[in-house]
Figure: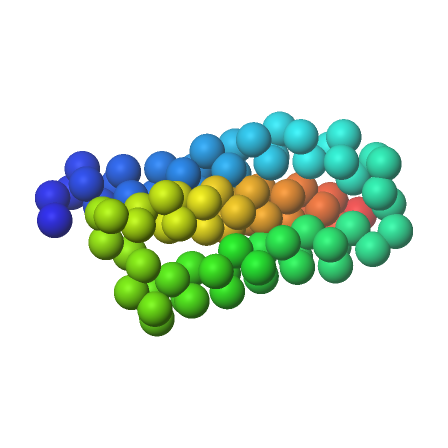
Length: 91
């Protein structure tokens, strides 16, 4: 695997992170109670999906849509969790 291919493998994670980071402040304002539990559970679901895909062998090119969707969920959960955690650090 070339360096460019390895970098492009994580592109869906970066897209999910970017979209979630930009929309996290609006999301947090509407759901104040239990925000961290909600966003960290989304992060955990993405991680569980990735582990399950690797364990069941769905990481080849024929089933790449499953891996892309799991990476999007993982990146979205990661992006949503960073904003509330950083806000807690500043308080």
